[in-house]
Image 1 (cartoon, rainbow, N blue to C red):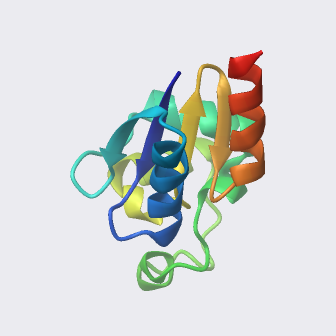
Image 2: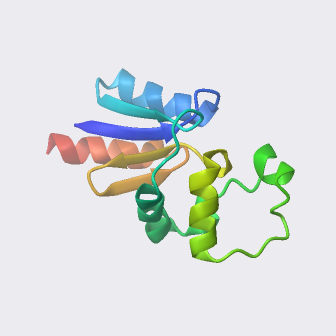
Image 3: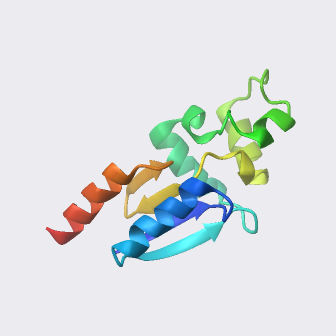
Length: 118
């Protein structure tokens, strides 16, 4: 089992995800969004599953500083915006095979582990 985690080193929820899988001896591939942005295809995969409202961290400082509070962007514009400025994302974005989660969702990760063991 190998899990991909997209987030930042400064994010507490990203560190929780890394610790969760590390404690269970699951191999992880970490992508630090401060150094390497997620690809538009990867972001589209999460957006198709959860929608852009779930992807955007509307409570974050980056969102407030960018003045997006009153913006009404199309899905294509959101995709471009998030690809250009990945710090607007709610993190961590976690992927295992075709399964995806956004944020600290340890209950879903436990289900993944149970599926892998079965």
